[in-house]
Structures are given as C-alpha cells and as structure tokens.
Image (cartoon, rainbow, N blue to C red; front, side, top):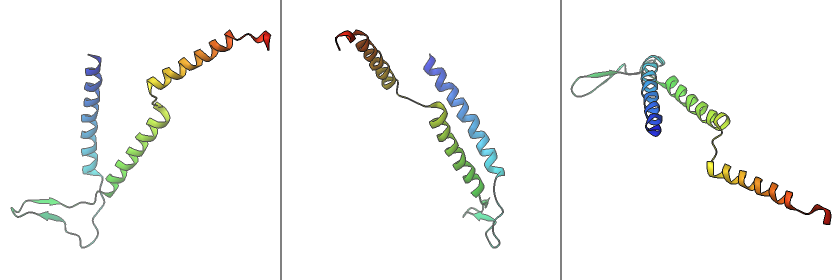
Length: 105
C-alpha cells in the first residue's frame, strides 16, 4: 500500500508540473527574426503559428541542472546496503579494540 501511495503522489506531481510547463511554454518565446515564416502550412491548409522557443528550452535546461544538483547536494542519496555495511564494520572495529589486551603491549 505504501508503494502505491508514493507512486500516486509522484504521478500527481508530474501531471501538475506538466500542465505548468505547457502553460509556461505557450508564453515563453522570442519574436521571430525578420523574414521568417509566420505560419507553418500543411497540405490540408491548417497552419501552426511559428515561434522561437529558445528561452523555454533554456528554462528546461536550467531546471534540469538545478534538480540534478539539488539531488546531489541536498538529498545525498546513498545505498542502504553500503551504509549498513559501514555501520557494521565500525561496530566490529570498536568491539575488537575493546577486546584487545592493552596491558601486554
């Protein structure tokens, strides 16, 4: 049940963020250079307004880099098995030091 809830919340988060990205992408564009076509026409005559989405792609790149850096520096993901092994080695090391006969040295 808990795994379902984790995936459910992540799915909801990604759906909401995708709506935000689509709305942002529709507003974040530059004017086309002089002489560029204003519409893309198909054979059926339906056209799509041509836009320069360079600032939107910059925003996506910055967001990706910021997300990656925040995961690296703030979440500090670590393998649970590695952490458990390190903890066990530390306990064994402390136990072996405690059991040593220091008077015979």
